Image (cartoon, rainbow, N blue to C red; front, side, top):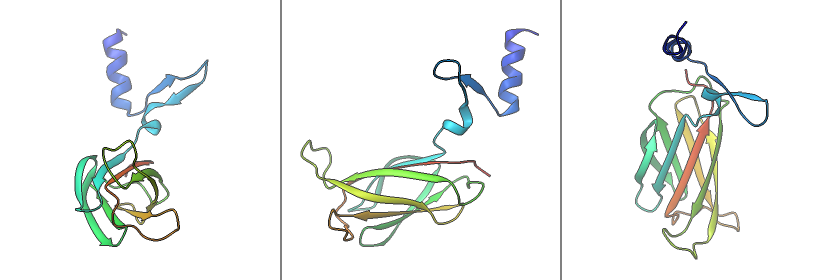
Length: 133
């Protein structure tokens, strides 16, 4: 087989293992973020995103992201970060909880350092990993 033919077969299979650190291999598809977003929590505008259809404000410090292509289940992982100003080197870090609500919705809950809800989060970034349906 030619290299072009080999590459075409790998692409068609939907599964690509690559050499990672040392001699270990990793599956490329499993390591990619399947959904991410960067949005402003004060006016609910999405700056940029991937695989996100809508952003919904659920109340003070609470948002829902609706994904374009559903996850395979609601056991995918999420992470994120938040700040009260953007761009600002003196921005205070805030916490967010990025958790699956369903295969098609992600809850983003923002908190201040004292545990209260915070609707003044100007910079919110989230990333989700898991298998798509």
